[in-house]
Image 1 (spheres, protein in one colour):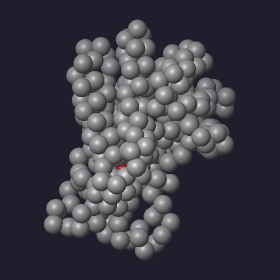
Image 2 (cartoon, protein in one colour):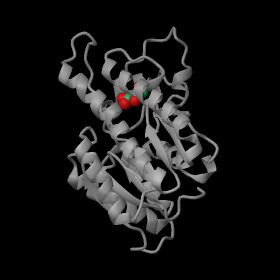
Image 3 (cartoon, helix red, strand yellow):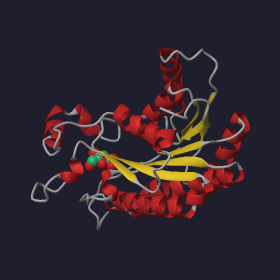
Length: 268
Ligand code: BGC
């Protein structure tokens, strides 16, 4: 994709799942990638190893791309600012932020422990905002940049038993649109991609053939998505091919957001 070669990228929550696939995809596009993780130090090192394999397969000379792992909890303002300092100092700048870090906990909406509710809001929504404000501060001083947020189909469609999660993703949608409008004249673009059911560790049902088949029967295309399919759209939104797109959410869901409302409520 156009304009990703040589760019400096920070991907939050890149030790597993969609974040990992995004880091690998950016490396294959010739970008320098900082891999943020919270707890999975070893997994983050694996992401770097897969980035090396992918960039080599794309014909990029070994050692010509910079990369690093950075430990930080995106919900903590001091850790986020230290992470940006480290990434910017090591790479000599930052062009692209991918707000990917996220989590979800299921539970009846009137009963879910408040600390669990807080965690979803703090990581998925406030964490994305803390990173965005650091990135924007840097972008304003350096001629612009791009932010891509990993949202969810649940920024739009309800999801019983996940009230904290849906609220966090609805907030992410509001953030994307507000920041996109506010910084449109500053050469800063902000967009989201919204995965549907995706084969990553956040969905343990992926390893249970019966539950997987049941969930996939509610998806118009009849299958889950792959992390690589999500990463392709994240790369597109960050690239110059998307130069005239801002404030949007691109749904990558096999048609999930189209399903008729008379079907079983979506809890997958
Ligand atoms: C959730 C997944 C779910 C998907 C579709 C995502 O945002 O993280 O657990 O499968 O939405 O409901």
